[in-house]
Length: 414
Image 1: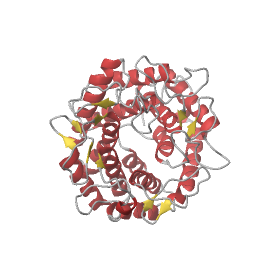
Image 2: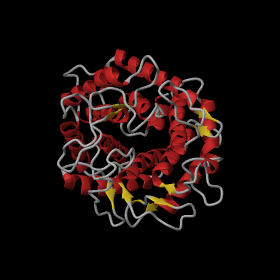
Image 3: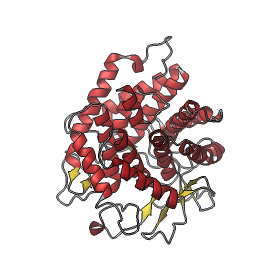
């Protein structure tokens, strides 16, 4: 990790803060272990219990597998068997043995059989982390995920990911999404580390150039989320469903923070690989972060980052989601490492102070996933506490270098 400027005291150098992050990460892991189901991992309620009708989901299974793999690499006992369970689920009941790719749920539990890039990016990420963790079956899962991504989703012509298909891959959705391409960028950074193939860094740069340097930069560095097949923005997409959990109307400050961090990881990874690295990567990361803070934080009379904004940068959905604040802390840490500037130290502390006060649930475990505009717990968008991935990564990222993906960085440190 780059040394932070010695002109000011940084939490990134503080043994106390390091210990706090590690303790919080282990607390999150302990809570999430209860999500195990016979066919993968399910969604926990507010008290950390699986509902009687809980069903394994591919998104949660992949995210849990990735998280437990990182924990195992980091020397946390009790996680190896959970990684193996996730690999078995992704290679078994969650996989389409007939047509290839992955369902959102086991076939017998869902009428929806389509294949989407968002889920497949997480399968690839989980497999890559499991390979770094040296778990049995991980390499075969990784090779399967790479084959599906390159053969079905990656568009060389567009330099980006196609969005979704029906089960047999015949019909493609007339949509392109920034969210699925963002998580594909994350997965590609991990794939570059695990495979040693720098083409994944070129693919990641191609996505970032289109979604961020072309479209977001042309929109005051506010991320445009929804596009046609020809990559034309759809500004009124889901205007009648503004609080959608994956495709909300307008722009999402949380994604701007997430993109800012990924852009910095890409810059560092390309420099390490001695690849051409555009100077605009740092500037775009700065601007994404700056405007997410300006228009998202404390903009409606109460602290916290609102979920969505309209095209005039006014809040639309004023709820505060836990993943947004986890990503904001991680992005500020990344910018602090990259620039050594006091402003990012200040933001880093601000975001953690808010999350510790408002989101971390010391009584019932994990983090409250959602707060209403008055910063009271709610479940209008996300019910329960199904997500380990965002908060757990936020406890790891500040302690790791920018130039490697998380699992590889943890393994290199061990």
